[in-house]
Image (cartoon, rainbow, N blue to C red; front, top):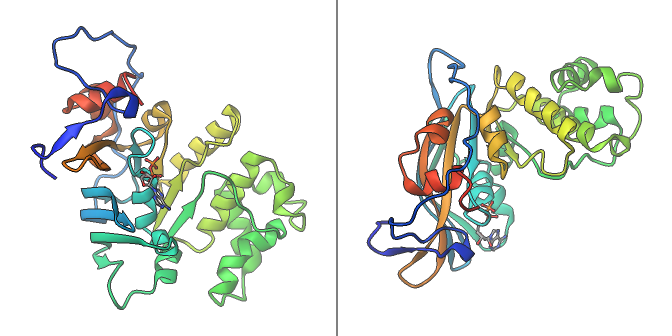
Length: 299
Ligand code: ADP
């Protein structure tokens, strides 16, 4: 999508209109630490080329190009309705489950086109796990929540080890080791979210997608999940949608900023504005729209 055939939204629709002459209020910057590269080599795990998503005739998200690196946390930020969740769901083919949804362009994971005709979407979702906004444990015991995925994959041996290891990695083991037969639904919201993360990693995915995983949690539970994400990034590649800019600044290595525009027919669509190291996005954004968003002028 070129700039010529688009117009900016007005501020009530989520993005600012400016003629460039007004004086901008000075807002406090989000405090940022200098980035420390998580790994020496930056191997690309997920490659998005000209990705677009339709819901029926509605072309909701357009022209997304980006590469996600291994063992990094990549944050997707931007105002509500600009297609962050839509994009996240397209990376493990969850959009397939929405009637009328269609994904265009190419999404490769480790070089495999996940929409290829010979690719099984269930297999895609095993390799690319997802954690949702609202914790969704199965109405089963804590043990069975974790053992479920490995059992589906035919694993019969070492389930105890997998359960312990997954709960340990999700920093939940000490809190639940004496009540593994209790329902997962009996846990607190933060514990349920860590249970869902443990369930996700029990099948050893290559990528973990998180759609606002802390949105329903209190600040203490949120910080625990953020710490956990940092730990998990040693082994996993994580992509997180967050409405919380401070969270993106705290946890992520790279940030993709999305916003919404109107096309020449007046149809609203989401697009990727800028993708860079998180430190750069928050301290030296290249695009004025990013600058306006990260400095709190809209969103
Ligand atoms: P964000 O995650 O940035 O808030 P979404 O991905 O939820 O944005 O939505 C992007 C656009 O796609 C919005 O206009 C939204 O109304 C539309 N959309 C999202 N899900 C569906 C759906 N299941 N059916 C139709 N339109 C949808």
